[in-house]
Image (cartoon, rainbow, N blue to C red; front, top):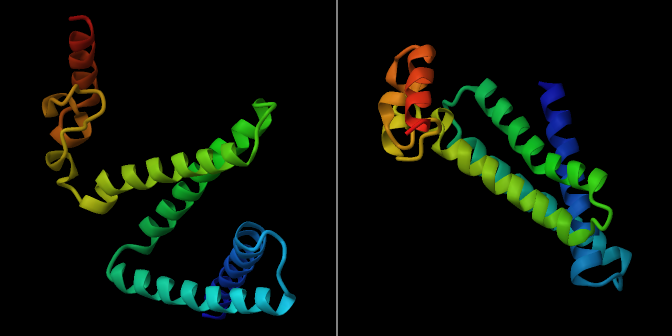
Length: 162
């Protein structure tokens, strides 16, 4: 229990410090702020982060914790990988690229998580017409149709040769 509390406290402090310093001081106040105001912004942010985390915890009651941990890691990786890749290979990479890369990675990973079986359950395939490998035909999608992957592969090759 103490480990969980220490991790939550560390994440709350890191989040509030980053928001207070990066957003409040540098973006909103353009560097012209007293230290007292920055500490106040960090405290208010810590309270807001605590409230949001509590509400999300209440909403996630009964959900498998392992699934939540995997989703959190996937979303974090999806938001950070585009920035890492762009910073290595794009010579003129700047703040706009960071915001765009993180935003696109975050939106795509959260969107895919919301339409996937981790959120919608076992009937996730029947609710959406967006199905990879099938051109919107459910009989070609092996994970949802119960068919073997070799049958799905043969159907995919038949569809792609048309």
